[in-house]
Amino acid sequence: MKKHFIFLIVITLFSSAYSLESTTEGAGSIVNTWIWEKSIGSGANPYTVTPKTIGFTKKVIFTPEGKVITYKNNVEIRVSNYQIEKGLGFLDQAEHDLITFEGKTYIIENLDNQNLTIVSNNTDPVRTIYKR
Image (cartoon, rainbow, N blue to C red; front, side, top):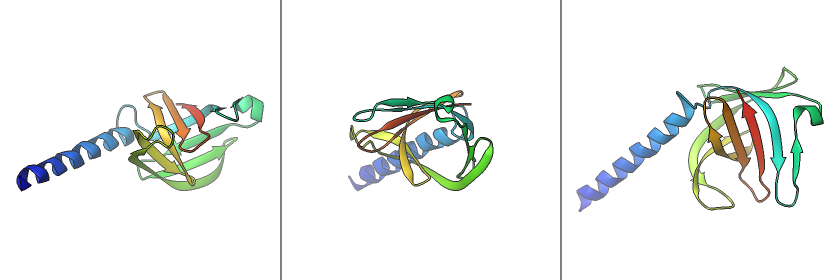
């Protein structure tokens, strides 16, 4: 019985590590340059903001070393660390890939070769959409 329990723990650890690895490397990787397309508020504060409506562009670069570099109008404004891990979504209490950077945690809603959509993991979520 003890061997089966240890085996299940090892399998769970390896399957979790594989899932997170696929988020940070390879096709559909977070590691790249992402251009902000728009942000959409929800709940009590519905709105849509784009570079045109707010008057500036934003770009983020996620590096393989765990750094995120943020640009506003092509001027570097911040370098910070990011971390990807499994965790619970605030609203649905379901397990998601979460990314934390610049002091905030987001659910990775969509990640493929051309699109990144993150949703703030709090009571009034904002959806932010980036393109490569």
